[in-house]
Amino acid sequence: HALWLSQKREPAKPQAGYPTQEGSETAECTAAEDFCSFYEAQKLFQDSSAYESLWQSLMSPLPVTVRVSRHSALFERTESALAARGWRRRVEFDRSAMSVWEMDNSMYPGEREWAERENRNGTLVFQELVSLVPALLLAPSPQDLCLDLCA
Image (cartoon, rainbow, N blue to C red; front, side, top):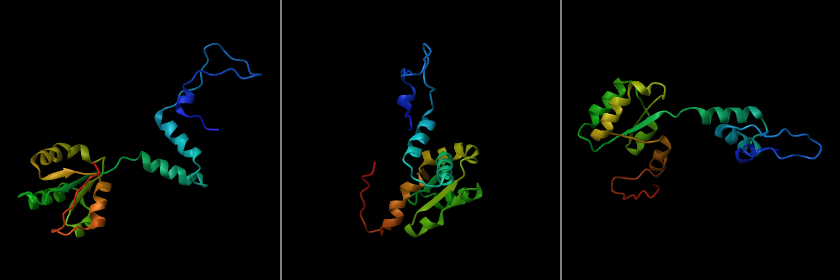
């Protein structure tokens, strides 16, 4: 029987046949523990190692992803700078005419100042990889008119 965060923070209730101590409470848990407890209770996986893999994946920081603005006069310079600075091009987005680059989160602190300056200058845009998937799947042509209503 799983306890949720709200239940774990309630004072312990006396149960028949069990002595209680005045002021005793159930142990508190963190939001992460409560999140984990919720998904374990869903019994999504028969194998506990599959759940552990999911949990590790959810706890791993995402890479930092940017899209180079093709409308910028500095498009080629920005792509060259990204490559020289160690960013990895996501070539699967090339077919949708998007220039998408990513960097491991652990490497980003040394790039943050540069990347944020380029963002302010309009040469690149920070964008989660999953936000780019609809454009990849739709593969609009230059003459197509698209309206993004997701925000």
